[in-house]
Length: 354
Image 1: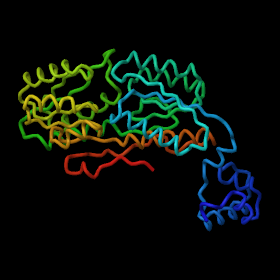
Image 2: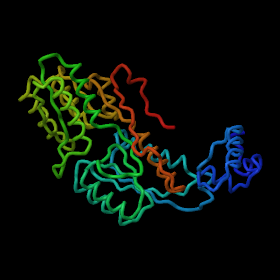
Image 3: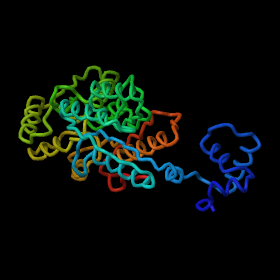
Image 4: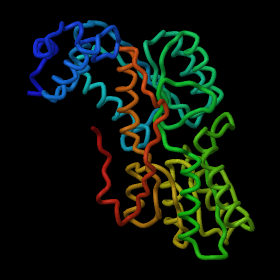
């Protein structure tokens, strides 16, 4: 019955008008206590669940959502977020949604600036943002706030901004988690290192900064005598990557625990394997196809996973509720679980969507 009952059926059974039922479902007020109790009783008895699609069809309005995220090939982290976004749009296929992607290179600040600049010029109804670079995101959100355009963050948040919704992990806690994992995996007396990506524009990503802060906090609190080494490596040039990583290993032979603060851990793992360096514990982020391969082989010790597909799915569904009914979640910031994937539980781990 829950799948068949309609608003007009609820109204008939409760002895009220369809308009009254609609006001109660949308919490618009101007309803007597008697009518509300009658409707709520029928809703409970029928197991009715309001279908957002039904109301959307009657609006007959087209909504333009711009998605500003880094470009990615299939199997990479940002492709998983895009998959979640596309799945949500398919779920709400009764609503006329036009999605436009404003892709940018996450390792190039100038690419991000150009992408973000194009967004406000197109005057969308809503925007989903992957806020890799803090200053560029602040500038974009200032314009969106001025234009009263709702926006959602995925993957990360920027302090001081006011998105309609955000879906991400607590990146400082991610850094703390990686540090503890490496501390447990690495023999006493050995050194640790942080490897991060070299970016055009010489600015680190927002997530990398927060992860590094958490990592350093852990060792500062638990092993203050440790000298954490740090180096940047290229993720775009294989030869340069190999040169950077091998030079660092040769100059720091006591390093036995490496944290790669992004999803490119497989690059480091493949270089170490190629050179027969197997005495290093390596932890990185995101269950990409390449990182999954390295976990299976044992060249990556553990990966931190942030449920990217769910982030993308929830961002779309939250913005749709805002656009259709001007409804905002009481909780704007949604923190995703921090999953630790190792070889033993890898076969059982699979991203899922509602």
